[in-house]
Length: 229
Image 1: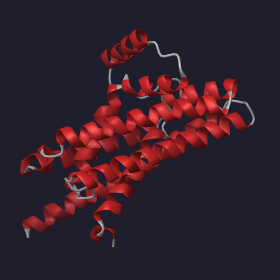
Image 2: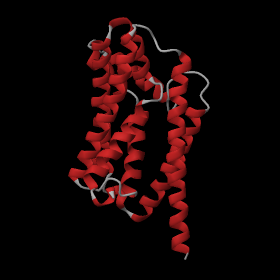
Image 3: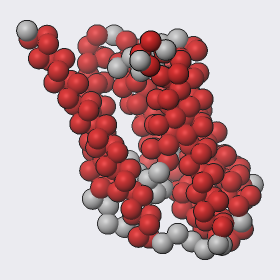
Image 4: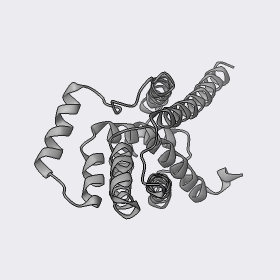
């Protein structure tokens, strides 16, 4: 039914992906948890708003810079396979996580780049802390590039300005909703969320990503079988 309404479909796709990508424990979530318990809801909310803004910017860059490239036949097929492998990898990583001490990262070099950016910008306001925490993490941009390729190849987001804008808007709403709820829960009793609860959230996100990976893999198998016939 939604296939006949590309704008709502793109918005819903962005909302779900924006929500799922923010649930795993990382620099922003840990900052909101620590600062929300110490300084209250407003400070934590501003951190979340800054992070949401940068998530939307990275998502827009992924769609604007790579959308036309993803529509080519061989590239489209390769990105579908890459999307499946990437979602499967992240899902397994989150499901098997045993602690929340280390956020998701690409490599030691990426970690050093993140530290260098944060050290040079040295944000002071709550909004800029959230903004820079996301901007300094190259894994976020990589994730959105792969997701953008997947969305376009599956035709969940059309390569038009209106559809891409709807998806980016959905991402902002989904991410903003998660950070707002997290800020409220943390500041409600002025106490930090237990590590056990954080692990459950990460495991839930991993299960959701594995579900998406298996659905995507099933679609690839179906397409291969159809073309052989």
